[in-house]
Length: 607
Image (tube, rainbow, N blue to C red; front, side):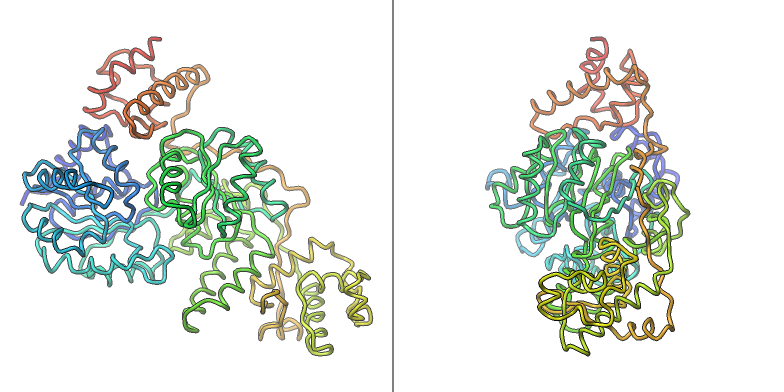
C-alpha cells in the first residue's frame, strides 16, 4: 500500500492534470486519501460540494475500474460524456444500449480500458453483471444518491437494499456511499442498510452560502413566479416544483404564454417526452422545467440559477435536496417558495389519508411540522435549515428574514377568538366549517352562508374586526402550523386539538409572525466569495465565449457545461490569457481540455 504522502501527491496531481483545479475544497482531500488507502466511507456533502471528485479521483489513482452505482439511467450518458471530455476513460451499462454497445463496454472493462463504469442499481441484481464484475479488477464501489436506500424517503429505490451484499462478494474493495441530504436518522439508516457500520463517516457543512432562501405568502402564485423570473432571472435556467401533474401542466403553459421558455416534467408524460424535456434542460441555456419531485435527482447542470416551489414541500429534507439543485457552480442563486393556508390544509389531509400505520403518519406529521417551522420562523432561514441537520449556523444576512425581518407579535387574543369560534360551531351547533366561514363569522359578514346557518346569532359573530381577512388567514395557517388547530375530512374543516384548550384556558401564549406591511424586494443574491467578480468590460467577452461554447457543445452533442462551466468562462473573460500556458492556469482547464479547446478559446478572445 502506498504511503499517505504518495496518496496525497497522486490525488493532487490528478486533480490538477485532469480536472484543472489547484486545491481540494472542504473535506474532499481527507475523504479521497481515506478511500485511496482502501477505507470504506459514508459521505454527507451538499449538492455542489464536489461529491463526485471524492470517488472519481480515487478510481483514477487506485488500480482497476471504479464501479459507480447511479440511480438515473437518463443521466448516465451525460455523466460519461463529461468525464470523457476530461480524458477519463468512462463507460456505462444500462437498458438504453443495444447488444453491440454493451459488449464493447464489457470488453473495455475486462481489458482494463476503463477508469470508471456506471451501473444502475438494478443491474447488480442480474447474475450476468455480477459474473462480469468478478472477472475484472475493481478499484472501488461508489454508491451515489445513497439516501435512495431509506425506505421512508421519497426517493426510495428497492434495488438499493441489495447493495449491502457488495462487501460480502468483494471484501477487499473499498466502498464509498454519498448523499447530499440526510438527517441523523437517515444517516444511521444508510449506514445500517448498506452494511457500512465500520465505515468512516464524513459530514460536511450543509451550508450553501450562494443560495438565497426566500419564502413568500401566496397571492396568485403563478403571477408571483412570473414577476420573480422577469425581474431577477430573465434568461436563466431554473426548476419550478409543483405538487400535482395538473399544476405542472398549467404552470408550464402559463409561463410559455408569458414569454418564458418552459417545459413540463412528471410521471404521467410518456417516456420519450420526459427524456426529450430533460435533455433540453441539460443542453439548452435559459430553459425552465416545471416538474413534480420526480425530476432532478442526479442532475449535474451547474448553472441552475433558481429553484421555485409553488406548493409546500413535505419535508425539510426534500426541500433542501430540491433547492440544492440551484447554484452548483457556486454562483448566486435563488430558492423561492410560495406558501399559504391551503398548503397546510392539503398536506395535513394527505397525511391523515396516507397509507401506512399510525407510526408512519406520525413520522410524516413530524416532517411537515419541521417544514412549517421553517416557513413561519422569524429567525434566519439558513440557521433554521442547518439546525434541522444538526449543524450550527449564524444569521446569514442573505435570506428574506435577514434582509427584511418580519415582526413577531402576541397573537394570543386573536387565537382565542378563532378557537372559540371553532368551539361554538363544533359544540353548540354540532357543525364544522372551513377557514373561510369561520373568518366571515369573526369579521361579522352577513353572507348567504352565514344567514342560512344563523351564524350571525353566535356570540363570536363580529368580534374579530381588528384584523383583515388576509391577516385572519395568516392566524389560521400559523395555528395549524403550531398544532393548536387541525383539519379533517375532504373539505378541510377546522377542529380543535388537545393543545387548543391551553390557549382557550389562558395557560399558553401564542406568538405569531407578521409580515412587513410592504415587503421590500429582496436584494439581488450577493455573490458568493468563491464566485468570480467580472468587470464590466469583460461581459461582452464572456458572451462571445458562451456563444463559442454553445456552438461547440451542439457540434459535439453534449450539454454546454461539459465543455466548460460558466465560472471558468468568467475567469477566462476577466483574465484574458493570451497564451496556452496562461490559459492552463485558469481553474477548470485541465490538460485534456487545454489540448482540445485551448486554441479555439484564444482565437475567440482575439476576435
